[in-house]
Length: 344
Ligand code: PBG
Image (cartoon, rainbow, N blue to C red; front, side, top):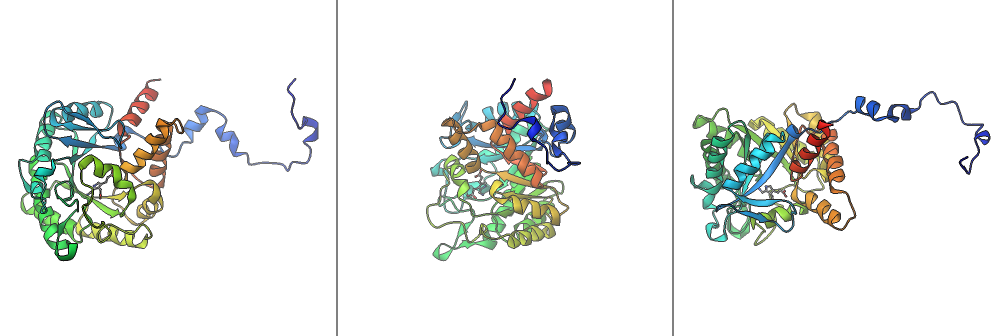
């Protein structure tokens, strides 16, 4: 006989409950039937960091489990991801400081690391969707996404012109999607025009429409050695205090010809994802960024959180808010979990 503080016969005056939502939660099979949002490997994009060399697998201290890979290793990793159901990757080149200059010249070198990597990937796994980031920060000595003018102000139009060149080179190498992440004005329109002029009508533009000046990008900058040498990115990335401004950016990128939109970061901006979902018919993604991944991994290393469960819950929340697809460093581990679960 179990001992309860309250005895059955004492429960007398509870109001009649026609509605008992718990009935729908009483067993796994019913919970599965009524599940509203689903995670699938095919909605995840894995960001990959690339370096020069052979057989390079360099750990990144602030991103446990994520490596900088040389092209031969990117091919292996991409095949592994593809067989787990992850059909899209985003490439970020980590180049040496000797290759960087204040113009980010390496961004428009047709033989640069990222272009060689795209060519190799296209040959190796043609059906994999390759997304190339379009911004100058991996290539500039100062770490800004654009060219620097007098008094350190980031020049818009000259930068946009260089981004157009960069997008064409990515397209020529075989990129399926180019993703301007720089937040310069008018870059989507210019990139569309530049691509079309060179016959790349079928290359899509995924616009980082609402990208905030966020503290969550720290580990990414460590991975690329692109930490800022001066200033901050607030004259081009958005103020975390603003949401109407994000809707305006979304409207403009849509008008300029974006094929898909991205909101970044993700968890602290779920209201923006949700509002964006309501005002656009375009496919919408969110970037669960490096700092969001690093926080969880750090807590997990201390035994304070279960990383896999936190990632799954986080990614579900991002989808529930309205994202169709998610860029995340947890892509591989989540796809592994989903694959295991589907086997039983
Ligand atoms: C830069 C770029 C950044 C990220 C993607 N592209 C960093 C920045 O704007 O400083 C961050 C991604 C991440 O933190 O995972 N164009």
